[in-house]
Amino acid sequence: MRYVALDFETGNASPLSACALGVAVFEDRSLIREQVSLIKPPACVGKFHWGNVRVNHIKERMVADAPAFDMVWNTVAQEAEGSVLVCHNAMFDTAVLCACLSHYQLPAPECRYICTVKVARRVWPALKNHKLDTVSAALGIELNHHEACSDARAAGWILQAALQETGSTDADALAAKIGMRLGRISSMGTTPCSIAKDIRIENTV
Image 1 (cartoon, rainbow, N blue to C red):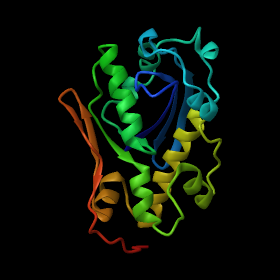
Image 2: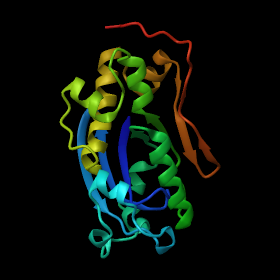
Image 3: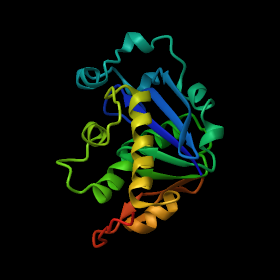
């Protein structure tokens, strides 16, 4: 199964303000490719917000000559098709992805997605919280937080750790064990990644 971990950074509250995309592709439990791209958001989203800049350190002048989202997505689209996307807080990243695809009138990939926040809450419930930096530190995953490629890579490794922890062969087996339904993105719309509240996880390995 191919997993394409994604992380978007945005310039302001608009999901169209994607200013960086990190990608980490995993196959057979191994990281096989990664990339990071700055993105110039469309003018309609307005100015970058200082709060976003404080978090991700990406300023408007840094993306002035960067490609637009459609050009960046063209380098990822083929791998995303038919894969399982992996995001830490997938509600955010998939909203950014779908908003940008719609704005640039690009076809949505036919794929599923999994949220590693929801996975971590089930597999490691004793952690003080399930933020990316907390989970990464607990699992010994190197992280430069809010750098898009590092965040994407960490999400991918969190999923791999969850597969190993639960003795799951793939995301479908993991989902079955933790009572999860993978989200879906398609030309027909999106279905959220959801998890039942009444499922208890037992250590199977």
